[in-house]
Image (cartoon, rainbow, N blue to C red; front, side, top):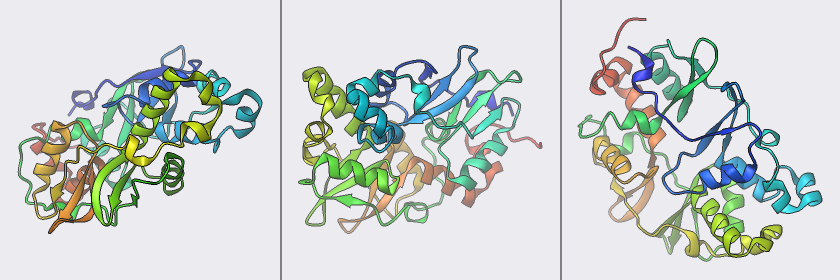
Length: 290
């Protein structure tokens, strides 16, 4: 089948755009975790993720530049100084089967699609795939695909501590617990959104990371917790994640936190268990031999 049937449109930025422009995208609720960076010829030059922006804000990347220009100055620098190589680029004539297998085997949440002239066409990500698997029953339990143990943090911890933990552990979110009770979820998007709000309120504070990140986790975290029982079918997890425009669900058993199931856990787990042809069929798209 034509891969373009599942290619979706996501925000992109130019190679010479300011780093602040990416912060304005990745710090908004309901946005993707990463942004594709294009040159003037609309060819892919790289990608930049929320984690990379957080590393810059923390001084974990571009520290010398930050020391010389201040954080405000760093945010005015071009994206080209901070982007990562785009490794997951596929031609538009590749099959969906190939892409699904690749994403599942590598636990990868997205691929970039280009045409024969290497011009950007769009992305295929886990949200686009799960969006075609709504209102279905798979015969697979959440416990069979979830990740565990979930990384947690105390709500009284500082945002600086939480941000460093996410960067060090290479995770996008922390489950916030008090006395082993789940009270919220903190994501990199939440942190970046906090920076955007503070920037508008007190621009001079952007020179001082300690000031920006001194807030406590419970001041920034999301307390609207949507969870799922580990014995439920993964179809219910998909419906909750896509229906609420969130990236993961805490998994509970007998009221206790057991783990977390994220979009890529669902895509990877379902493909590995059901097989690529069956997943393509359930997406309502006819599989074909390559």
